[in-house]
Image (cartoon, rainbow, N blue to C red; front, side, top):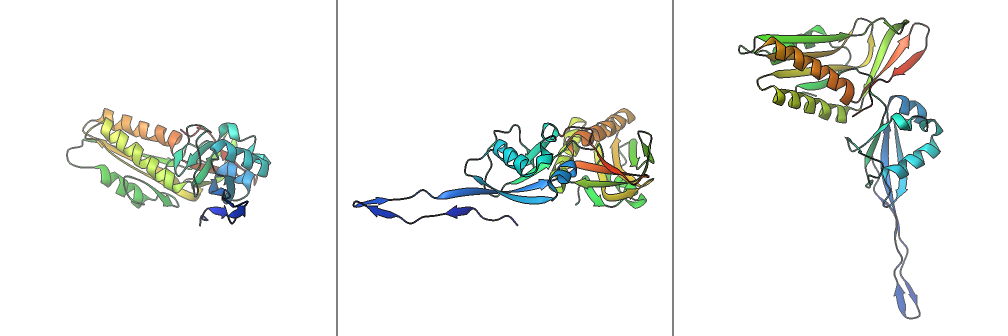
Length: 256
C-alpha cells in the first residue's frame, strides 16, 4: 500500500519577542512499478521513493538511475506513465501517492469483462467461440476472427514457451479505448478482443480478435487495425524461453 505523505514538523520558536514559524519539510512518496526489462534492471516489481515537494518525472529518473544503474541504458526506450497515463515529457510534476510505471517497448502481443479484456492462461476454444458470438448478429454479414498462436521459433532460435505480462489497469483502459475508437470510426461494426497472460506453450493461442460488420471489407480492415493498435498501444510484454535454456524479452514497438 502507498504510504501517506512524510512530514517533518518543528515547533514554533520565540526569539526576541517574535514568533518564528518553521517551514515543514515535506516529501512526496511515489510508488514505482517496473515491467519487463525495467523489472530486470530494478530487481523488484514495486518500489517506493521519497522525493522533495515539487519534484518532476525528470527528478525521479535521476533518483532511479542512481539507485539502479542498469536503468540508464534503458531510458531512451522507456515510457513513463503516471496513474495509468503516459507522461508527455519529463517536466510533468509528480504528486504524493502517485503510481509511476516504467514501460519498455511493448512486444506486439495482444490483449475483467467488456469487449476488450485480459485473461489468465491461454485463450481456449470456448473463449474464441464466446468472442465470436459476442460480435455476431443477423444484420452483420461478415465476421472475421483472428487467433494468434505461440510459434516454435523466432529468428532461427527454437522457442519452447512464452511468458506474457502486463500492466493490467492501463492495458484494460487502452483496450477499451481501441474498441470504442474502431466502432465509432465504422458505425455498425462490433469488436471484441481477449489476450492471455502467463506462461503459454508452443501452439497455445495468446490472442483472439473478432470483428463483425455488414460487409467483409470493413470487418477485415477493422480486425487488422485492432491488432496493429494493440501492438503499439497496449502495455503487454513477452519473454521468449528458448530450447537452449536462455530467455529474452521481445521489445518491438515504443509505447504510444
